[in-house]
Image (cartoon, rainbow, N blue to C red):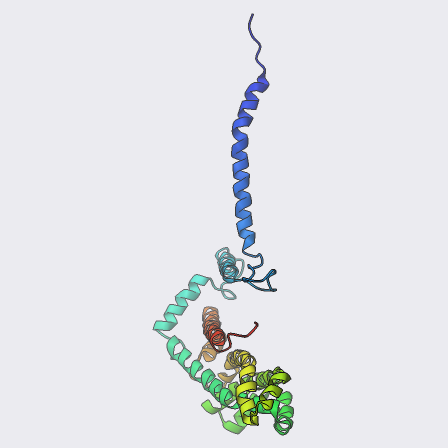
Length: 308
C-alpha cells in the first residue's frame, strides 16, 4: 500500500533552513543600527565617576557626519537643479573657482593676497585689543575708578553694529588702513574687556583673603591670584573677540579696499558671481575655525584645570 506523505513536512524543512538565515540578517541589521545610534549616545564616564557629566564625550564622528551630509545635500540640490546655479552653484564649480582664483586671481589680486590682507587687518586689531582690552578689563574688575570711567563707554557702544559708527570712523580717520583696523579693533575690544572683568569677578574671595593673610601685596594678589584665575575667562573672551573681528571684516573692507576676502566677496556679489561669494565665505570660515582650534589648544595648555 502506497504511503501518503504530508506536504507540511517539506514546508517545515524549508522553514528550518531559512529561519536561521533570517535571524542572522535581523541580528546584523540590529547591530548596525546600534552602532549608528551609539554615535549619538552619551560619552563614557571618566575613571572614578559613576555618571557622565552633561555633554561629556567626543563629538568628532558626529561633526564629520554632519559635514558630509550637508555636502551631499548641497550636491544633490545642485545636481538635480532644485536650485538655480545663479543662487547656489554646485560644490564642484566652487572648487574649480577656488583653483582659478588661487592661480589667476580675482579683483586684481590672487586668493593668497586677499587672504594676506584680511589676516593682517584682523590680527593687527586682535593684537591691539589684546594689549589694551585685557588690562583695562582686569582694572575694571579690581578698581572702581577705572570701572566708572570705562563701563558706560563700553556698555554704550557694545550693542551698536559696526556699520552704525563706520561713517564716523571714516570721517575721523579717513579711508586708509587705519580706519579698517580701528573698526575691527572696536568690535573686538568690548567682548574681550568684559570677559576679563568677568574673570576677575569669578575669583573666589577666600583665595584673596588667604593671600593677604600670608603677607602678599596688592600687586602680588592681582598677578598671582586674580590674573591666573581670570585666565580661562580671558581666553574665552579672546575667542569671542576674534569671531567679532571676522564678522566686522566685510564691513571694514567696504571702504576703498583694493584687496581682502571681504572686498572679494562684495565685488563678486556686485557681478552676481555666486561661486566666488561662497568660496570667500568658506575661506573666511576655515581661517576663523582654525584660529579657534588653536585657541582651544592654547586653553588646554595654559588652563588645564578649567572645568575640573
